[in-house]
Image (cartoon, rainbow, N blue to C red; front, side, top):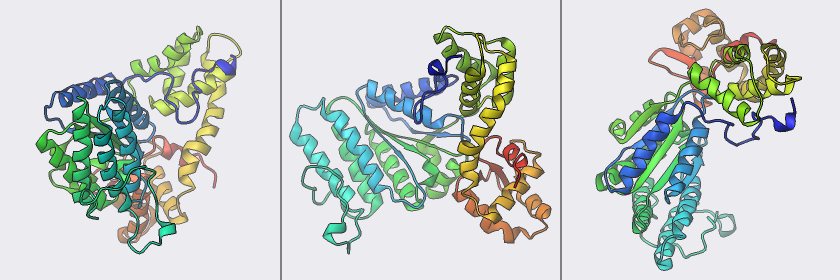
Length: 397
């Protein structure tokens, strides 16, 4: 069928053609927005799940919901070993600009921007030369004595308070969305939890919505023992068969095309219900179909092309980040699970490789930091990427 009309090819960084199976999560966030707007205490939200389940897409949808309610909203993607001040400053700058269009006191907005600038400038090393100092692009003088102590925990509480009060002025709130939250540095995570705790006590209208890998709750708990009371944890999983079918049927119907029931069966079998894979195999099947409707034969013909694309962009890009020792560890996991999406005992991996468990700890820890595996429970390890074991077993090294 016409590739120009392909509804499964939205382009890089865009949402899938149909956000299926997430009504419960969207409804829960709607309640959060309403409760916070009415001045009632509400926990911040943390979305967890494997890669490919659509956490980033859902995060973007929640941001859109906040903006439609007149909130200020900023989104960042955490990066390993990177500080939080700069990206957080940019996100909150965006949120303040969202609020400024409704605020009737420009001086008040500028005062909050001054506090934000003071917070941002503390990311510069004290001994940095003037020409090397980063500037946050905020065209007001930096405030003095507010959010500029250099202690991230103190500064974050003061900054969040200022921004939340600005939102309160216009009867709105602020949503700070953090993707890949497990990559936030330990001291920054601790500060973030402390700030959320402080604001929850005062009922300030600011919520943090984080998204990350399945071990994110453990990261937060290790940072602050009370973190489990701060956040509402929502596990994002693959789609049910009904929702997976809707993710295919809705965009196909919008193009006034059709797809046979057997083709839906084949797409579900190939994708496992993971949204990222549904889109990849759906796109390939549409391009491969010579006529309407799409058939199971079209899906079978298209599968190798989808597999090849995933092998490079989804699986391969991650595999290439691993060292030879780490690849050996990953391969052992794949062999022990027969390529299935299942956890494996770390002692089994050591036994499989004929090594002492302690000698494999550096490779395992590095893989966790790179986001390729996670500790499902004590002594267990699993892939963060669905079908990664199958990819590894099919790979010819």
